[in-house]
Length: 423
Image 1 (cartoon, rainbow, N blue to C red):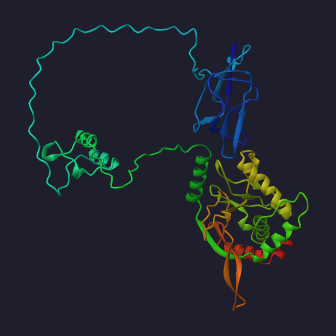
Image 2: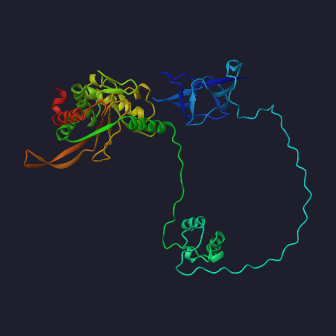
Image 3: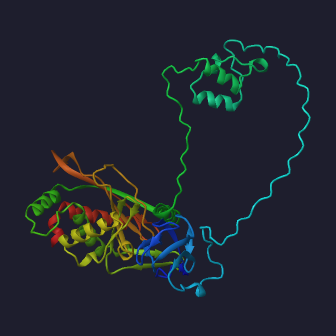
C-alpha cells in the first residue's frame, strides 16, 4: 500500500488561491476515482474537485471558509501500489488516524502524598441578620444578579437580601425561586442568546464585492416612473400567440431590449472602469448581467452578446443562466464578463431602491414592482395605468448625471411605445 498526495490544482485565469466552500468526504472514507471531494470557491465561481484515485482518505487539510493556495496538499489517500509519496512536499499534512505501529506510552502513576492532619472543626457562629432594604429603595445587587433576575423575570424588590444592607446574592435568588417566588405578571422572558455565524463561502464573496463597490465607486442614482400599460398588453398578446418551444415572456426581456437600444445611443454606460490604470473600457458587445437571488446568495449570471439576440432568444438564455445559477450549475464563464447589470425585486415591491453597481461596471438598472395607479392622461382624463419605477445607479466618475438621465428616459420612452423595440 502507498500514499497519494492530492494538491490544490491550478483553477485557471491566474488564480493563486481559493476558498474551501464545502467538504463532501471525511477521514476514513473509501472513495472512487472522480467522486466529488471538495468544492473550492474562486472570485468567479465554485469549482468541484473530484478524487484523482481510488483509495481511503487518511487526512484532509483545511475546513470550509479557509483560503488555500494552489499547490497546497489537500488530501492524503491510502492507495494500492506505490502512490506518489516520492513527489509529495516535504511537510505533508499529518494523518488524523492513529497508525497501528504507534507505540503506546504509559504515563507513570503519581506518587501519593501523605494525608494532611485534619484540623479541629471550629464551632459555627451565626452571622447577624442583615437589615432588609426599605420599601421603595433600589434593591442592592451586583450587575450579574440584576441580569439574572431580568432573565428569570424576577422583581428584585421582592427578594429578601442576606448581605450587608440587604444586598441580594445569587443564593438569595435561588432561595426565592425555590420558595415559589418567581414573578411573571405575564411578561415575556428576555432573550439573551447570541448566534455567531461565520461569513464564509459565497456570502463572504458577496460581502467583499459589495464593500469594494461602495468603497471605490461614487454612486449616482436616478429614479423615474414608467407607464408599462402598453408593453404589458403586448407581452400578454405575444404570450398568447407564442409558438411551440418559445418561452413565456416576463417584463424583463422587454426591459433588456430597451436597455440594448439605449446603450447604442449612450455607449459610455456599457463600460468598465479600471481605477488603477485610469482607463475606461467601452464594449461593442453587450453582456447583460441578471442579478439573481439563489440559495447560496446573490449571483449575476450573464446573457452574453445580447445585442445579437431577439426577444425570444433573450428570454430563453436568461431563463437558462439564471436557473443554472439557482441550482449551482453555472460555469465560471456564465457568471463573469457582464458589462451592464439589471436587477429586479420582482413582485416584492418597493417604490425606490438604490442598487449597488457590480464592480467594475459603471451602470446598473433597477426594476421595481408593477402596480396599478391613477394617472392623469392628456392633461385632464384620469385613468388607471400600470406603473413601474426604474431605480438605477451609475459610476459618476464615468457617467455624467445628464447622460444617466438621458439613458433612463430613452428606456422609459421605448417601454411606453413598445413598437419601437422592434423597429
